[in-house]
Image (cartoon, rainbow, N blue to C red; front, side, top):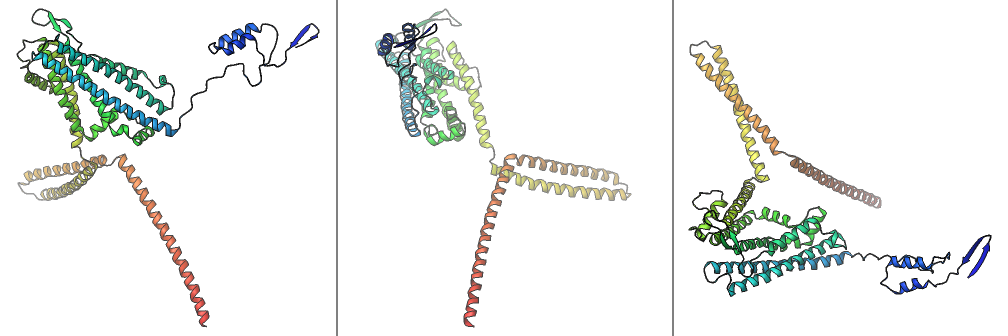
Length: 481
């Protein structure tokens, strides 16, 4: 260290050595001390006007964390394939667990309705405990499915933070699925007070409502079909959808099924709704109104059928609040399914493009024929009216009126044929047809130009051969001479 004085100022110079203050050295040796403590300790230890340069090759600020390396295309595709297989396997597990829980619930309900055992007996409690175990496993599978979905999105978008790919609608869907699959009949007998329209309030079991709620797990059938659809598993379709900015999701698969097999899809939905709603109606009426004479399964099927078809004869009505709620849901679903059925039938009965062209062509021919016939009738009627006006017979007034009526009728027919022909021409030719015709003409012109160029090349080659032949003939003549 050297000290120099210039005037009144004193300058203390410290050589560039790798030594640091002891407090800073201790903080560097301890990895648990954060950066703020390091700066504070270094400031406290260096309160004197001593300036020291940091060692060469070292920075005063701690190094920033390097971002994770970006995966190449091959690694991303391989991970995507593994995640798609894992997600399909998880969906299979969800479907199996949901189906097992529904089967156990139906067996427990039927055994109780038929009087085999009570809700507090050991077999009933055992079956409900099995339902609870399957429900817990189902909830875990649902969460695992969403985790796999987040990993797939991270690979698609090239991100490394899961918060960036998890949106509000995803959280809403996750909690909705968890709530739907969480509700199930608990072991034992949970009772509530029921206030019927006729009679005094009494305690009833809550198992009927909880059992019917479990039927909402049947939405996993659609999830199972979507997971096993080739539209989601095929990589080429996913890539084409990404390039076309089309989301290949469950709604896309449902629309594809409705466009390819609409009848099968609607029949399956109607049959499933009919069976489930009939069983739910019977369960509600037996649990909460056991004195109802129409609480059997055939009566419930008839009630659901007339409600679904929005007929409602009124001969059978539900007495319990649960049964009435199911009737309202059945009516709404019946209206929606009927609308879909009408739309599908209308699309199936619609003519194809080729059929429209043939029909329009035949109709135009008929209209032109009617137009010519009407024009000929106009000329005939005009000549007859001129002849009648020229002659001065006594009965010509009635004939003149008759011919004038035929003339006006022929004129109306001719105008009608003309207007129908114009309307048919406007409906038959659209922008799509014009565009396709233009593209077809362009392709035809390109083909003709290509054939013309080929013909020119062939003619040029023939000319060259003719020139070479003439040269050889000239040489042959010179040799002979």
